[in-house]
Image (cartoon, rainbow, N blue to C red):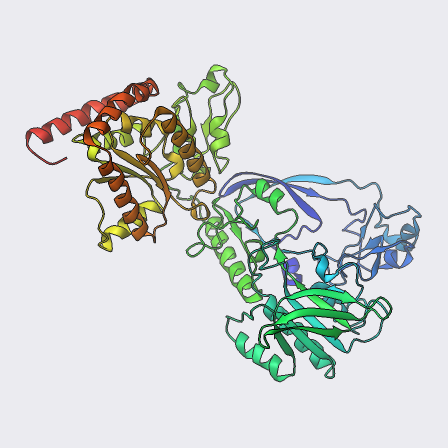
Length: 628
């Protein structure tokens, strides 16, 4: 941080919050709130005279509330920049800090928050992770037993700059502990709290144990664990060092910690998997190695930055393997544990990668985007005619649609990623998607269903997953019905209900509505929108009395070629089970229902002309006996 602060091209804005992010890649408008410190940065020299004079003491968050700080304070002695701050929630306005500051006159109680707007080309999010609060795990007694502490509290107690100057002592009586237990996976790998592994906690526990063993060779240290995970370079050797140093490893999650109320000694009851029995040991102190969790304001920042979150609450990357540092929003990148738990080497590597990705934008005059963007027809948009709508704006996962009542919606091209969700949701057919227009998709449907449509299985596939799954099924030579006909769109969110109705109106035997698994969607909420639409269609077709299985929804990844083949074969078996005359009768019976829902389709620009051209081509091919 010192090097960053000294770099002329780097501006460090401490004690500043991001309130709003607008714009797009290369042209972000970021609103920042510089919170009032009540100390002038241009006059403060970090001498700490104000803190020494201040009579007010409050718990110190940086020291995990194990020591106090003054109302005039810096978070830590190595803060960058080293500018003091007045905590107005604790200040009693005695003005002793003003007297102590003297001629510098750095204290200014008239200061107010300063809201500024910056033009930003690229954004790197490096907000880190939070710590799981083990208080709800009453079986461990954290918050009730003074000698049960967290890993971060141990970090401060064992630090030479900490509240005890590096002298480890029990909070209950300030005595040096002789027996210490470290419990791993507190709050992680636990379906009650966080199902995932926190990645670095095993190594973190071993590090703390070795440091304490080096400082206090006679200390008896035991680590309770579910599994020891040491997958990176040199990690297994580090684990071996700990065992050679005499640190005990007990495999088994502790069930309960109890306390002697007089001596505050602790007793851990646990299963020892190696011995195959329940054990109980006495300790002077217990350290809980708690889970890494997303920051408390992660949800808020996710909405401010307009980036998605994974099911665990972490920021979701564009692609977990190919673009792990990119967010789905162009120009916003992730570094470190805000995207998921990481150790220091992984965080440094991702930080360097994110900086490199951001520099590509800063050194470019123009930026290429996907050509499959959405376009609004202003003359068809009902908002421009004074009606309230805004459905497209709510459907867009990227905030790429500018909607104002009374004005036609407008797509901000640079922010559009081409998922087609707005096109699929617009009830007035006022939006189209370049290269996947309604006319183009409908032309493909009419061509694929030109001959014996009742025998066809029409498969709508998303570009990124189910299309790849179908491709893999072919290259892997998985056998599936030759009656399948595939149709590619960018996302399941683009699979407009009108496209499904038209397919059935033309006589399709069965339709497969397929796309990514929820966690694999390239378009943040695209799969969610597609799944909701598919569920609505399923209910509609059920009310119509359609044979079950003629409409099927499946989420298929690009690696699931076997699943794609199996699904198609199952759908073929469903069709085969319906007598041919019954199927044709059902198609004819439902055709008026489909036509009723498609009364405006031919009004969509380009559709009527495309249908005339397709009918002519199909007719010519049939005349020449070319298979369709």
